Image 1 (cartoon, one colour):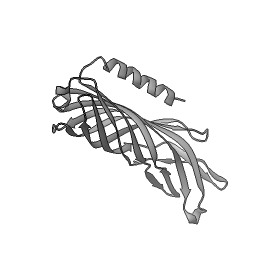
Image 2 (cartoon, one colour):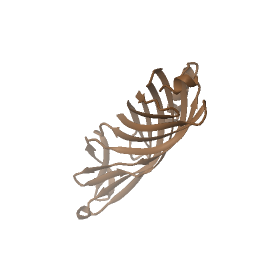
Image 3 (cartoon, helix red, strand yellow):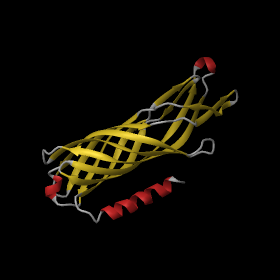
Image 4 (cartoon, one colour):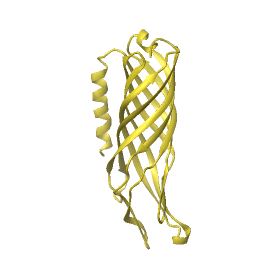
Length: 212
């Protein structure tokens, strides 16, 4: 349910920024690798699936970009026990919503514009079941990519990202003789990644875009 409030809040920020020059709006889709985390009795993993998002790129100086973005992945959280402990398996449907802000550095080879950067923010873990609890985690991403401009206003972007919810302590899923319920806590890192692309809509003057 909380996911419904994230996108409107993001769109409000987007609306206020569209009054500014040097702004690009980038809707995109990515293939999101789920990630895996081992614990004493087995492991958990997030099933790989697509994610959908939108990014705002605001150029503040030559090659220096502030990026604000939101993206969401609908997937399954899979919990497995090792075979010697019975090989129990359970799957939970979840939404993972990311809000990130940070800096990118662009390199001017117009119409090609390679970029790299780091963003920080939060990830909302939102199970679509009452068996797990909603939670927010600090998260960061590192990314590399490339933009190509067909015209002064329209281009494409491809990207590859490393995604990391920083701490999963307090996240509980339980294991018992009757199945998997609530019971263990994890305190560790989990690494995910994605690769994808989207369209670039430039709302500012082309001279600023080409000098990223």
